[in-house]
Length: 433
Ligand code: PHE
Image (cartoon, helix red, strand yellow):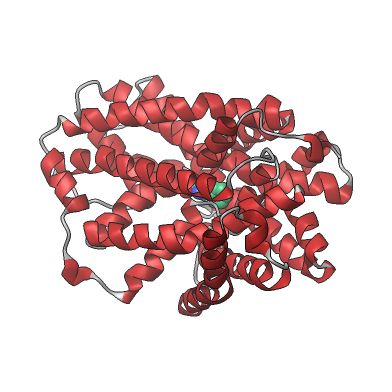
């Protein structure tokens, strides 16, 4: 099979691609805000502890499964035990449902790149964004355009498409992020912005913070849906799993912090309330950019940066599904890419319309877009991760010994994997419900 032979051409390409998958909207519009709202430095410490001691375990499981089995998600699960096949498919369902709302945002990003490029800026971004996102045709077309741009790279293959895209876009993304962060630090709100992020308020510590940090960590590291497993299956034989896992975590966290350093000084320079999600990226930030010197350039860079972050994540989501269809349905890469794109298009169109003509259509009291976000981030990701840990810990003999060279790491991970992590995840799932 084509996928068995595919391999990253170098270790650095593998790291860049996994960082490309991990770094996305979650880092830029969610992490800084959650951190600021949850007591800044206290949250940061909690988050770092969770990511370093808890999330590293499922992350290494996915990397390890990729390295050991060298297969797509479903085939890997099936090989461990044929009864696990449905759990493998659940990962693929998750990885198809996430782009269905993620790519709607990708379409909005394309629109904003265009308006900053052509300097066609509205005077009121709040009105503009609500009018634009509730339209029927344009946001759907842009969602499909974003989908096609993303699908092009996995369609071109691992080395010819995915690796090239990440190797070009991720360094550019990083340079743009650093440039905008330096620019933000020259503004009057820099001190206040940094204070919001880093000034610890220990009275804010509570158990909810742990849950928030864990949910954020799973989403941002792309754990629990087979993307890291798929990228891991292309790694070279001599790759060190633990080192790669920690490199990924460190890069992801540094980028999330830089995103905060870019965002908060700007927000505080204009005395506006910091917020998360669409409001921050599509209303607050562009409104601020429009008032700053070099507005069209800074705004343009900001949205291109968001575009790179989201497309490299999107590529990894699509590749996990495409690679599964190639092996399990014996499809060609082209047919697989087409089928994945069609499935995503079918669901993302109603998700886009849920800001307009379908806004009154609710599933469990949520619009289609919000429901997809909730279902995947709060339920499917923790559930899939729980299954992954139980499967690796209890159903594969000596899994930790197989993936770690060092006996101490193997022993520690074994205890975490078998007992601690499942308990924590069950706790998270119950509280999400
Ligand atoms: N980690 C990405 C982010 O932070 C999202 C993502 C989820 C990417 C699932 C791939 C798979 O935005």
